[in-house]
Image (cartoon, rainbow, N blue to C red; front, side, top):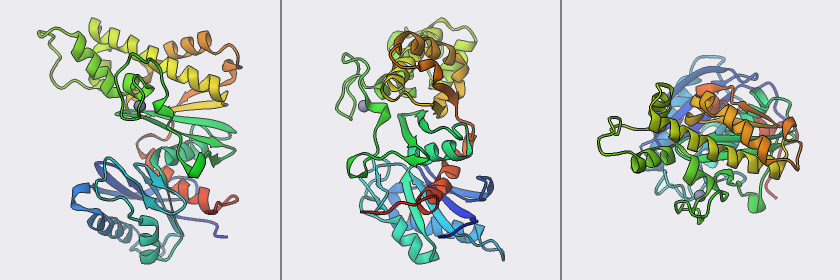
Length: 318
Ligand SMILES: [Zn+2]
């Protein structure tokens, strides 16, 4: 079994691909990125990934022991294939694990990027030493990963559970998942924008270029409508997290994603809702905390994917 381990990490997102070299302690030693340009096809993206890894490992003594990939999903972690991914049209069935193994002749592993970030926070971040950890990312969508005893919880057929798509309010907007009023449809960044647009008059001065970050800034400046939007967001974030606390009674829930950069507006309210709603479980023992790995969480997570697969017990298709 390999040990020691400098890993090349590949983070495949809808808009950009980042590649980094990650040391054994989770430190990013060097990194590069390029646009995904998904429409130009998988083969060209693979070429760019190979070139970036070669550039980062060109100097003598800069070889890597393996390659870990975190990708926008769905992906099939144990075969290495990319599934039917919205942001990667035409890439379904392609297999970056097989292709990178062929080029670099080192072990390669892939996971959904939310599971990758969850592994990173569990191994090297805010969830360190937590036995039962949920990682939740709130941005343009809501996703997450479940880590039990350091291992990714997988569903049937190795499926990735969708923490962002449980029902909150059946009178809410229809989501592609099938539910009307699932958590993502009500509490992801775009839901904040949609609500402000629907509830502002045509002369509301901030209608142009609204996004969740801007709404949070306006709330801090005292804008009445933005404050109501933040209240609504707090309520829906709190209800979703309270459901997770009740269903899983985890040691910790680690919150990441772009909306959580404004977490100070929401956290106190969220904790209040959990207190009111989770009386059948020891909610006060569930730590609700912020992700600690920052901008590089997905890249660090991709390296952690390799460690998760090939060290500490390993995991095999069977
Ligand atoms: Zn949904």
